[in-house]
Length: 105
Image (cartoon, rainbow, N blue to C red):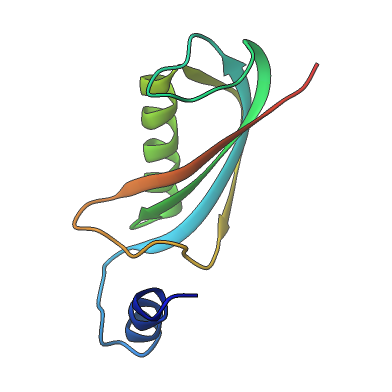
């Protein structure tokens, strides 16, 4: 872990870096269509996972579905939402990162 990574995590943990956001990981079943933005996954059924900074689970779900639609993923199942340790620092707005796909048949 680099010093800059450790620094923001320590500052966040000890209240020196303040954010209104909570860090979540969201996973949902859905349908992959034509993906954009350099994402790769065969068309068809897949799970999509995403790490999200948001104010609530409801906002995390909205961010997940909005980004999913923008990149070509339509949610067809329930969203599983977990509070998790961040891998990237929070930004000024709710945001998602580390998007992954796991296809299945």
